[in-house]
Image 1 (cartoon, rainbow, N blue to C red):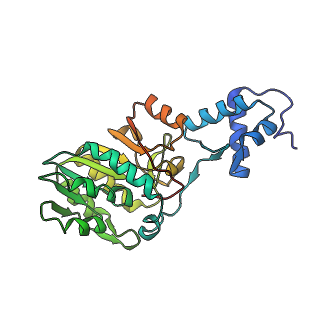
Image 2: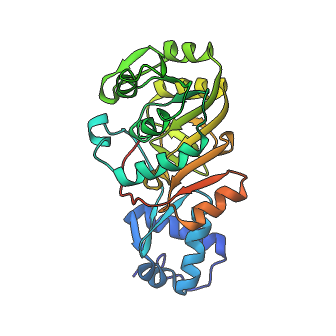
Image 3: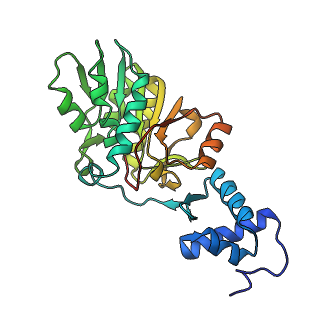
Length: 273
């Protein structure tokens, strides 16, 4: 075992956590047991270090260990996303339905998590739905009691939605009561991010036009980040996620003043949007 993995002199917490991150960069995922041997400290110390790194958005706990926060380079297509984490998405949508009321104008962002909110939305009267998602618009066309506005814009075929300046300009001409925003990657350090620059201005325009903005996202996406930043988490009035979000991450979000609502039921293993 190298001297880096088993320091001869005790390290202060910040030094030890930097070493833990370096170890993760070489292994991606390590168990708590492995880290106790590599760092020469107790299980309790390792768990405290993991919790501290989670609060910083630099690492994410997994059962029995920890993984490094990773960069997302590509998002899954709509077809791929539609088969991922359905119980979690349904649970998130059911929790987010508490924000819905009669006679309101809502924005539903593209993505299968926001799409799961549609059955809850149509139970209300006098609803206007603005969306850049073709699947959502198509489903709502079957209900004449809901007024539907599609943003238009450049079509992103893989995700069955529109993006770019034209879509953002449409949103800039509207007044929304609430915007439900989805994301493929998020954490406390980077906020809401995406690997697609064309999605940024659409999400930002929806948030700017809305009286309230709510982020709907699964815990499996926490601890990942894309190249392009949409907004910090404090820009949202609330974040709705599933019960698998690590406790340290929940506490860190609440310490930053981010209202974090955890849906009952549903487990996740990956996915986006």
